[in-house]
Amino acid sequence: MNMIAQYAKEVKENIRRLGEVSELPKKSLDWMLSVGITGRYTYNFSWLGRPIIQYPQDMVAMQELIWKIKPDLIIETGIAHGGSLVFSASMLALLDMTEAIESNTEFEPKASKRKVLGIDIDIRSHNRSEIEAHPMASRIQMIEGSSIDSDIIKQVEEFASGYKRIIVCLDSNHTHEHVLAELEAYAPLVSTGSYLVVFDTIIEDMPADMFSSRSWGVGNNPKTAVHEFLKTNQRFIIDKQMQQKLQITVAPDGYLKCISD
Ligand SMILES: C[S@@+](CC[C@H](N)C(=O)[O-])C[C@H]1O[C@@H](n2cnc3c(N)ncnc32)[C@H](O)[C@@H]1O
Image 1 (cartoon, helix red, strand yellow):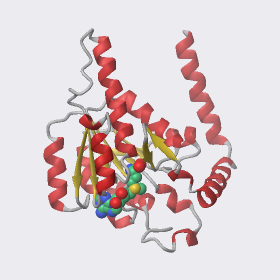
Image 2 (cartoon, helix red, strand yellow):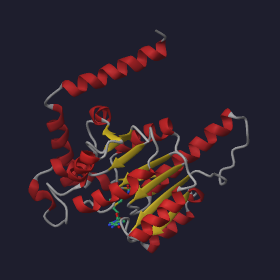
Image 3 (cartoon, helix red, strand yellow):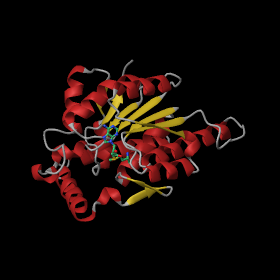
């Protein structure tokens, strides 16, 4: 076995061992609760200057998926300040640059067919201006409206029809009903071998009184929606390896791999 294959084998083994440590999930959850409550942890990061409401661990996971899948379109519900759109757009720019290097052609920074499509019910004007002025803006398209509104879904389907390799990320309203409707609407757009990533499934594992001011909570959140969706949908499986290796993630049971057409 060569050194590269040997290294990959060791990593696989590390991840398997992590999954065997029964006290780790609780320790990780305790840590997430601590930093989340006292430090509003997810709000404290930015990507290329735009605030991104994600854990760094999940950003690295997304980077791995994007590099592996090499999507031509990433669809994201939930824009907020635009950090996740800029993150995805920057990854697509790197894919374009890589292809240019590999094919010995000119990298044209603003001339990519690869796009990120963001949908948000309320794109605040200051956020829109910053996103539109960002160096990554040529790869970003935005639609304002509810992600489960039939007109919006139609617009997304029309946009997606010109693309072949699609990743979908759901990070908008976190109620069971809303996420289940998003899953039904957007899962058919995910290409085989690609991923449907559902953020904030962690809500199900948090203390019941933590979300009293929210319309979601324990029993009513993205994870319950994922589990219901998977009862009738055979195209997707939960990528347990991903959460096993991350340990710290807002998306346990949320990394869904599309395994068939
Ligand atoms: C958690 S933030 C998104 C964070 C962003 N993905 C990031 O990583 O930086 C949730 C966003 O969902 C939006 N949202 C809430 N309800 C929605 C709906 N029905 N349709 C689309 N977006 C919605 C909110 O306006 C808010 O901007």
